[in-house]
Structure formats: C-alpha cells, structure tokens
Image (cartoon, rainbow, N blue to C red; front, side, top):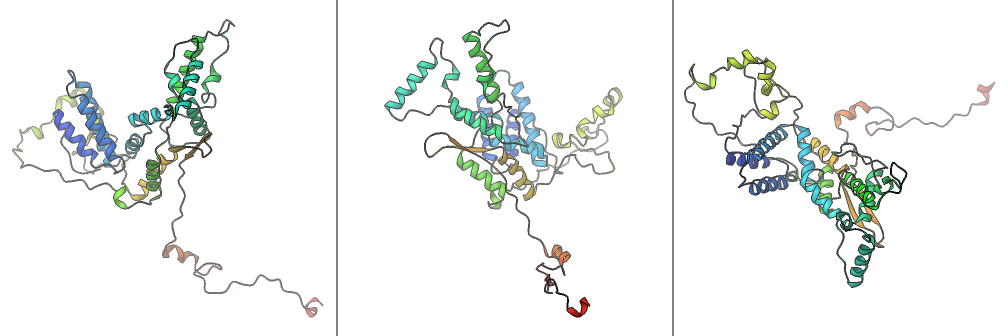
Length: 369
C-alpha cells in the first residue's frame, strides 16, 4: 500500500480526473480499455438530471482501482477480466460477434440464407434467436464444456445446459403436447441462460498478446506499471488544539460501537478507503496486499489465458477449430547455490569422479573353492 494519502474527490470533475489518473497506473494491456470506458461513461451521462447514482458508481470504481493498484490482487484480476472480455461490456461485444451470422458472399449464399430463415420461422413470428448463428455457438459451447477452468468469473456450463433444445419437454404437466409458442419461449430462455455463461473467443492478435504476457516473452514496457508520482503537499495552516484536523468526533464513539466507527481504518478496508489508524503504536499493514512482481504478473495473465480461446473456421470449410490457452511450465534453472547440494553425486555436472562400473564381476575358480 502506498503511504501517500490521496485526497477524496469532492466534485464531479475532480472524480473524473482521479479516475483517469488511477487508470494511468494500470498495466499497459488493460489501460486503453479502462480509460476509454471511463471517458465514455462520463460523456454519455454528462447531462443527466439526477446523476447521484452514477457519481456513486464512480466513487466505487475509484476505490476499486486504487485498491488494485495498491496491491489487491483480487481486484486487479477483475480489472484484467474486464479488459480482456471475460466480464462486462467487452464480453458482451465479443458475444455479439460470436452469435452474429456472417454476411453472404454471393447471390447463391443469400438465397440459401433467405430460404433457411423462411423455413425456420414458418407458422410464427421471427424473434432474436433467428438472428443467431446457433451452429457456431453450439460448437464453441461444446468446446468450453469439455475444457476445465479453474479461475473463471462465470459458473460452469453443465452437460444439460449445453444443448437447450434437449431441455424443452415434449409434453406439459397435464400430458398434452406442448404448444409451439411455449416451446419457443422455453428454448429462448435456455439459450439466454447458456449465453450468460459463455466465455467468448478473443481475436487472434489479442490472444497472442495474452499468451506472450503469460509466458514472459514481451519486453518490460509491455507489462510493467509506471511508478506513482508523489502527491503535491501545500503549506500547513493552523494546527492548533482547536483546529479541524485534530478534532475528535467523540459523539460517534459514545453512540456507536468502536468497530463501526473505525471500520474504514481496519486492516481489511485500508486498501479501499486509504485511511490509516494513526492512534496505533505499530504500523498497521492492510490485509491481502501484495507486491507486484514479474512472476505475479505472469500468473495473473496465465489465469486469464486459461479461460480465453480463439475460434477459426477449418480449412475444409466445415466445422470450427477452438484453441484454449494453456500456460506452459518452465522450470527455473538451478543457481550455483543450489548446485552445491549435488556436488559429489555420480551423474551430476559438478562431479569430477567417474561413475563406478555396474558390471557384475565373475567369481574366480579359487574363490569358488
């Protein structure tokens, strides 16, 4: 946690600048997306009549960004989830690209698409499910179901949910045939539940960047975060006994539990609030605070790589190739201090003595007598 105490923003413009400043300390891979989202959200709600809810969301996002930059790995992982499309708006955009039907390349393909659409909606009105490429989506869902994910922000897809058409019953509770409208409604509901758990594929270039970050095959400028600038301090004013900065709110301690009054200065909330318990004789360290190292960054990117995939059409034009990320294990080379432990052991590089012969000796006739 940084020992510098950043003042809390009071105006909307102050909050906007604080958010942009915190986004500038994020990893280079996540910085453009988070900065763009901050700018887009403030511009879209700039002329709102009642912006209190949006300002409250902005303060919440500022606390999360500060905690992530200060060493909260869980919140930093969530920021990376948002940047690489595992959560949030970026994920919805990737899902839209996944279910979108490709445009027809010629007149024959256009006529075939029109005929298939007309035949599928015969006897009913077309809906949003008719616009989805269900064959492509089903192929990706089957691949995601077969792949085990450890750190995923979405719940796992069960085998029953992988094919919503199989979950639609043929009869109702009275044993009668299910009406087509009700069957279609149940089918749409099954696809909505399924699409909420899908981890959409990434573009090839973005997936390759994520792979290189997880393997450590990129220069330091691609993953290292900039050093935080020091806070400008003004000249101290009046610090007498009656000043406001030394005023003690004794009424809160008299009417509320101490744990509730000091909740912002607790070790669990230090990263979020930035408050410090100045009355403590020992310097309190916040909980779950980590120091970002190259190894920790590789692990964070490796966790995201394992839940990210690429999807390409097969060379023969039938089916899809889905490749999920997998972090390769690289054993670190042994240092000279570690190799001292193996000195004198046969077969080691440090051993100078030739290994003993394992050839079995034939007993002589004299010894046999």
